[in-house]
Length: 315
Image (cartoon, rainbow, N blue to C red; front, side, top):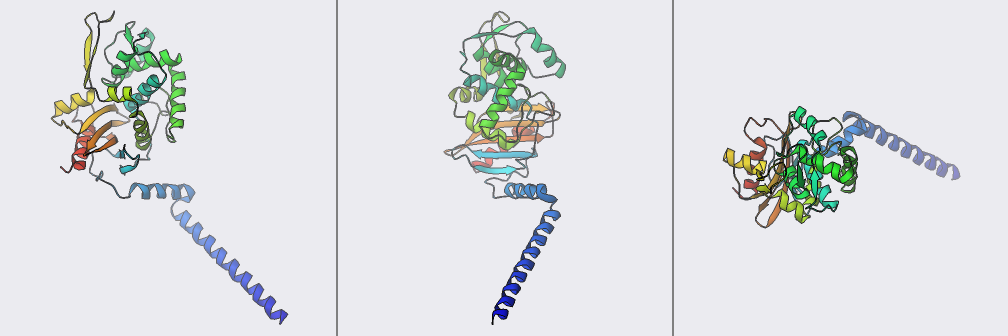
């Protein structure tokens, strides 16, 4: 009797061992078929991206996009939102936010050092129109960074806040970490091309979701034009406009649904746009990237935003 029980016990162990080995072999085969553990992770992310979308983003000019519900914090639609991108001038959203959160007096006068201009001229960077050595208020520079995408404004603000652009980039990365932007790294305040300066549309959506709660940021982000009062470089003052609203009007693609936005472009990043708009009583943030084209073509990034918000509004 004892021998029978022992045999049954040994047989049970053998069956358990064979079953476990089979399960292990099967799991290994699955992992191998999708390229190892990294492939498994990528497969999961692809499945997330292919989930139910509130609107169809597949037909956009932009190769990468994410639509975020600002009321709930939930992703409403996405297309390759975890793919690494170069943010170009969308970087300036973080720059403006950090200056506002640093507690700088917006009326404080800042001198734009001559040293910050040569690199910007060499790279063909967007400029707001301030001159080397000119003095302007922090407020003027914030609007100059966001609306006409002024690189000189960003560099002047970075030096004012942190002492150097390198130290300001450290603050940018610290803030990104606080916000859970796990796939983001900054090396400058402007978005000029650098292999170590990257992010994702999903991370940028998280940044805009957070920044939207800041009233000063929201006011700057949604402003169509701003007039700089008289300065030592511009005795009569001067006015600049939001590049997004300007391009919307020039292309005939104006939309009452879009509240504000920040454009971006480099040859590496393509045409990019961060915009906020409404659909009924809901507010959404849309981040698009890698649209073909340039400053000399149709504003495909803006056409995408207009299309998405029209669809959200049933048009």
